[in-house]
Length: 259
Image 1 (cartoon, rainbow, N blue to C red):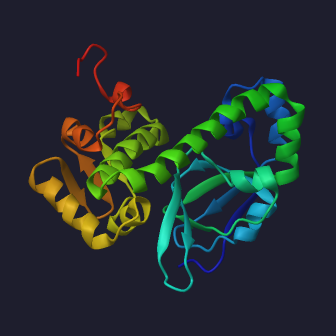
Image 2 (image 1 turned 135 degrees about the horizontal axis):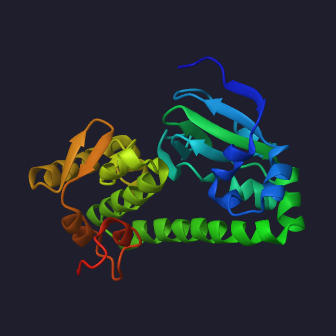
Image 3 (image 1 turned 45 degrees about the vertical axis):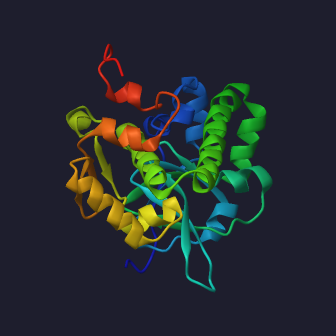
């Protein structure tokens, strides 16, 4: 484990600010104004992230993967609240209610972040309608994800929950990479080992491993440490039992392919 958090003590450039989806479509002059307030930060896998920082600064992921967790100190049991990729931000709850949030921020790789003072971020939302207009759809998206996550634990079995999590993160990884040379890897999901999948699906590692081994045996997936390779997308979609077309299916299918 790295002993200290490593910060990059420089201002973020307008180019870096535009990499975050919620800022990308803003006028150039506004981005240049915003850029003056951002700092570039870096955390490495295993480094401690003090949650008190969330009451001081607002963070946007530029590169890497971050897991947001909560833990029961009496039992040691953990649950994953969110998995963040490039373009995602945290912590929305603190931004909105200005109250401490008891979470564990765990970088799963080297992570580069933009950060800005919370008060500054709030001021931007109230002052600039064009920014508010871009921020609200992202907020709504995260709220929908939380609703689906909560209902899935109650309404669906582990197999369905796992398949939905994997399919969701195929989409996330596709947006996260965004590099032309990696387009062929859109069926690859990184960072979701058995323990992480157990936390995300509300079950235990042994049950997750059993289901993954069944999928591996029938050729649905291949499994290598912290990597899942989806080999049969259609089979996984069937296990997910979605009533409507999956949001990421349109990204993965050929334009005129019929289901």
